[in-house]
View 1 (cartoon, rainbow, N blue to C red):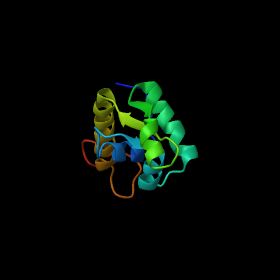
View 2: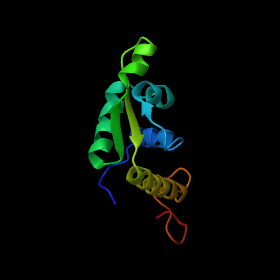
View 3: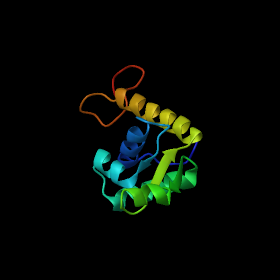
Length: 114
């Protein structure tokens, strides 16, 4: 297990990246699909990089030049990142499903929510 804290913002980044786990994405695409500004997004990607969950690389110069634009920095989930993200997100979903409606506390075995 990792010590990467899954914040709501990190959750949205991971959920989007898991929609196409083998494909690379870039910051603008992530911003458009998560609604997060770069100032929020890039620190999340940096933490995921440090954790070994993502890899990053620069686009080939030729691709950018052909489209007459700056190079893009791409991010892609590593195999470990895919596995860890799925586990962590499943745990978050399970914890949420145990929550009683209108309560911030998980449901107990008796279902009383205490």
